[in-house]
Length: 171
Ligand code: ADP
Image (cartoon, rainbow, N blue to C red; front, side):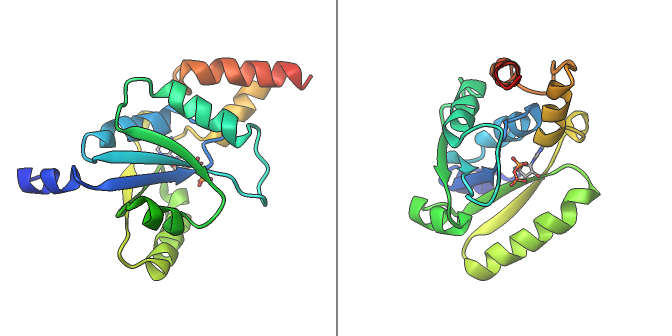
């Protein structure tokens, strides 16, 4: 990337929306890799009434914060409306999303196009996952945790503890 382009991005706010139920090493890796390119990344924790989550939005936000202790230009918020509405209010010009495999493509492509229709001035940027995290999803991590498998290298340490205590309390 050219210096000029890098400097322009450094005055740009980006939103990284998702469920983060819970945050995984794949999410963390994407945020850490991208943080330097933006003035600020807002991790936007979805709080949809139509979805059921293992962790409350407060718990999910807390886990995002605890998993990124040294990332000073990363902020965490939650929202139950359209991502583009939040982005407009926050003055964000970019929506970041991750792509793990072909299976993610259709959904991400449809969502990027819908967001472009709703807010043409906001650009979705798709970031490829590192191969070592390409199979890591919040859903898989929860299944591994429920079955007592090791979560090392799949989720940050605060998430390991949160998953264990959530599962212990529900038994
Ligand atoms: P959603 O329910 O919106 O898909 P997720 O928390 O599952 O929320 O994912 C948020 C974003 O992060 C999505 O773009 C997803 O593709 C991406 N993502 C999920 N897992 C990973 C991973 N292992 N590496 C990089 N990006 C990921």
